[in-house]
Length: 400
Ligand SMILES: *Cc1c(COP(=O)(O)O)cnc(C)c1O
Image (cartoon, rainbow, N blue to C red; front, side, top):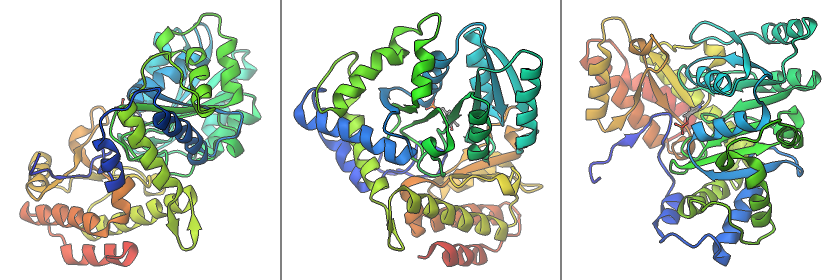
């Protein structure tokens, strides 16, 4: 792949040199002492990145983000139970469908494309169900919905569920390690992601942390989940590795775990303004997002989602009037940068998406290359855009 283009989609993303180096080694055995150390240490680092308590259980499983969603669903609710889904787009709709297929009765509180329901609407949905004697057993939300770039207020939602003694599950696939999330102090019960987004590793790992309460919910299910996604099978394995003992239920993706360890090590060692760890790393994502947003505005582009709700990790941008979407994306690609089309059902043709998470947030030259590619292609397609002004405003915010 010698003419490899800069990958600026919402996952998979560009990898850091350290992660690429970790990937180069031949796959270790799952019980090699070095690998056991790497697996155990990765589980410990996940707790730091997730803001999870010592009694929570992290899981590293071979699979995609969708598998992580399935594991969350299958382990905390069963046929006949009720779940409320905060629906902000494509991936929340997928979560609702997964719940229905498990026989769970699903209520939804949604909003038009690019918006999110208010906390009040969510609380009203929870409370009125309770008053009707049909209280929900769990609440599901998507931290950043990748189809629109909308970020929900995960802290307020987790607290609202916690106050009512309700389990809360957050799909963090386009958020974890790029958006603030403090599992323990917010009282959230499951935070799940996949390796290929802000975590900064290749695709192939489903990552999730379960709270004590979520682990209990699995124990009280009337019927066990399918074996391969059952956390009762996986918990002893994770505990063994964390205690630095090899163990086997189903072969871990050893090469990917090595890459994950390299990435989590970088994330937790991130340093900025004399601070170290996940906090400064999230602040850097926010700074990058502010810079990209200022650049988009300078190019005359509008966000697809409500500006107050826009995520750190990506931008969803409307095609300007008169600009053909397919031609724009092709022109950007011809300039060496890959961005993504729209994803919201029925609205795909109105906008495109740019990922800005992980390694690139600290590489102003790559951010500038992206802004330049988008800007020049806009101009080529007859949209007046001041590319130099966009680059200057980006530089002011992210350096370079
Ligand atoms: C990408 C994504 C998923 C799906 O992850 P896959 O690895 O593609 O299965 C789920 N939820 C969100 C929010 C995502 O961004």
